[in-house]
Length: 112
Image 1 (cartoon, one colour):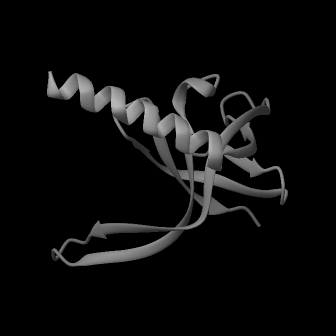
Image 2: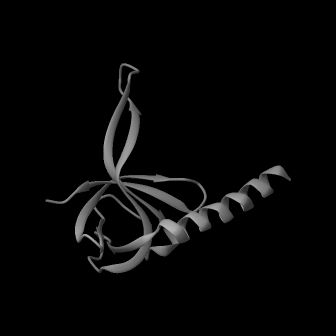
């Protein structure tokens, strides 16, 4: 029973956060090249922690897009692109981290 409550609560909380913080994004899948309009949460500087071969933690900063996967025409893939409509700044997807609840954090690299 606790897990159902937790999932329901998480869904409500995630929806509320998205309604407050999401912004207009143009999403362009590499497979089709066809741009589409979506709403997502963008972070210009997201700290990404990884562990290297020697077991040391490595911290890097990357742009990140937090998106609801079902808002996209297809599952996100490496080399897909997004543009933050407000700034017209574009990014390419270099890593995809699904959260298990229908959302994904897309780690990006700014396109020159």
